[in-house]
Amino acid sequence: MGGFKDKVVFITGASSGIGAGLAKEFADRGASLVLTARRADRLQSLSEELKAGGGKALAVACDVTKDGDQEAAVEAALAEFGRIDVAVANAGFGVGGTVDSLGLEDFRRQFETNVYGVLRTFYATIEQLKKNRGTLVLMGSVSGHLSGPTTGPYAMSKYAVRAFAEALHGELEPSGVRTVLISPGFVESEIRKVDRKGKVHPDAKDAAPPWLVMSTKKAARQMVDGIEAGNRELVITAHGKLAVFLNNHFRPLISLAMRKSYKGRKKGR
Ligand SMILES: NC(=O)c1ccc[n+]([C@@H]2O[C@H](COP(=O)([O-])OP(=O)(O)OC[C@H]3O[C@@H](n4cnc5c(N)ncnc54)[C@H](OP(=O)(O)O)[C@@H]3O)[C@@H](O)[C@H]2O)c1
Image (cartoon, rainbow, N blue to C red; front, side):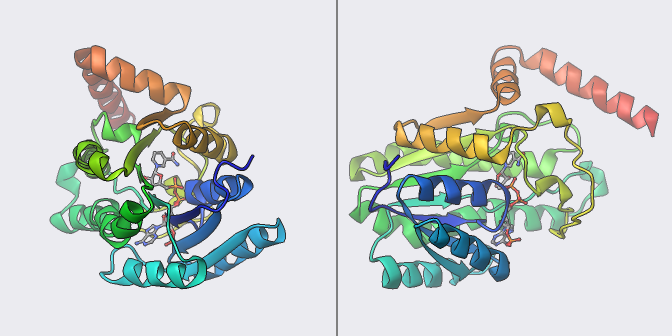
């Protein structure tokens, strides 16, 4: 498949999970990759893997919470490849817990990465995207469609990403830039091993029921298929689609189910 031949794809959060999966999928379809995240060693080995497979890749260490990091990464990308056609604002993590067990700092930390990090990707890449009539991909979540007990900060951040996507659809259309919002359900990655401070616990158990978790490869294939097909919004995984549908059409029922399940969990503690 060569749907992205001669295209340059810039990805944040490419050192693991969905970001790394997307990098491999885009590379398989002919794209050159700009891989960014904080863990430079991981980016380097992914870059070498892509190059060994005949692809082109550049690894650039970058923290989406730091002003200027993504601009520097874009400069490095332009020096290497001369252009950016697709920017994927994917870096993110989850702060969970009841609101009264958390403080303002927890919400700030969540928004600094999941919301302001996405805005920084927008501002760093938009000039290139306009120049090349490119595509901006925003990684939302099913949690950007429904919120319930203990998911407050994460869901708030992903609702914000969805609102951002909806504003951009119309604003960017005249310049030929397409915005794609991706809302995944459970996908295999490290996200459920990262604590609310952003620290990874490699030996932690994935709390999602294994039968509901889609493989990274399958999810990445469906995402890039949707981007290539020109979609503006993608909900990934069957349970994700069902949850969004039920929430849109039967919100009181979903709300009741979430409240009951939370009460049950509290009692079981
Ligand atoms: N997997 C799921 O079930 C699921 C479902 C819905 C939505 N999502 C969304 O998918 C996106 C990717 O998550 P994932 O599931 O693939 O989790 P993951 O395996 O933990 O990957 C998260 C990525 O984000 C990067 N990142 C985190 N903080 C960063 C920062 N400050 N600066 C730069 N990079 C940062 C991490 O790299 P470094 O630590 O190396 O910086 C890593 O590459 C997130 O936006 C997440 O909310 C995931």
